[in-house]
Length: 121
Image (tube, rainbow, N blue to C red):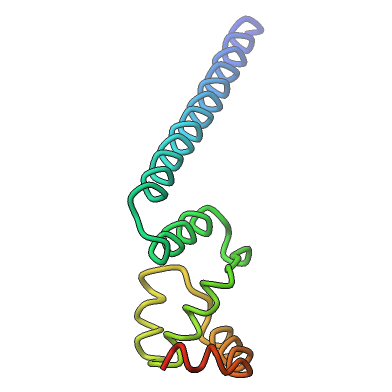
């Protein structure tokens, strides 16, 4: 019986080691793929669209509450929300954007800046 327990423990340890190795390998592959994609984005995509792509990649790897938004993305979200809250809700389903409440708060903040208001009209 002790021999069987020992063999079971060895088998379980081996399975655990293989699972950890597989998880590490998947993480490395994902990291390599992400690096290749980011390099291609930096090389072939114009600045305005690049910001959207890089934002998606950065926030795709974080949890729901840990999303961060650059100044460009804040302005983009506020501008889209300004033009059409309905379109904003549809776009939010496609890309990572803050809640409509956050976008409306940013819009209020940006409305203080006349340059921003002129730029989005």
